[in-house]
Each structure stands twice: as C-alpha cells, then as structure tokens.
Length: 88
Image 1 (cartoon, rainbow, N blue to C red):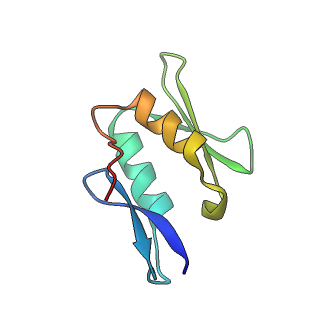
Image 2: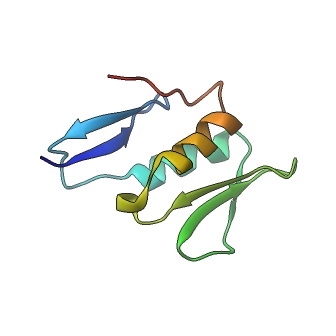
C-alpha cells in the first residue's frame, strides 16, 4: 500500500493512504513559506530551496517521492511555530 505525506492548509503534514492524483503540495507549500518571509532560491534544479535574509536555507526534494525525514527536519527546525510533526 502506498502512502504520501500531505501538507494540510494549517501547515501540518500527515501520511495519506491512496491519495488523489491531483496534488498541489508544492504550490501550497510555497505559498505558506513565502507568507512567512521566505524567498525562492533557484540555485539547484533538483531541489526546491527557500532562503531568508537571516542566512537560513530550506532545501526540499523537487520530486516528492524523494522527500524524506532530512527535509522534514529542515522545515520543522527552521519554522517550528508553523510546521508541526504529529504521529497520526
């Protein structure tokens, strides 16, 4: 059975079994991060990267199948008041 991480509108990721084919995770994720003052950095084509003027950088796999705990850790540590990891 395949599962994916899904970003909810409130910034919470959850595991979803049998997800719908249409998923706009990248778009919603970018809207949230830009709203929090992060800017898109286009230095590496295989990654979605966002940076702040405070020298923080978040790197995410562009291919969501390669999204892993390292990417999740990067998000949660740098934006702990918005993104939360919950065991569902």
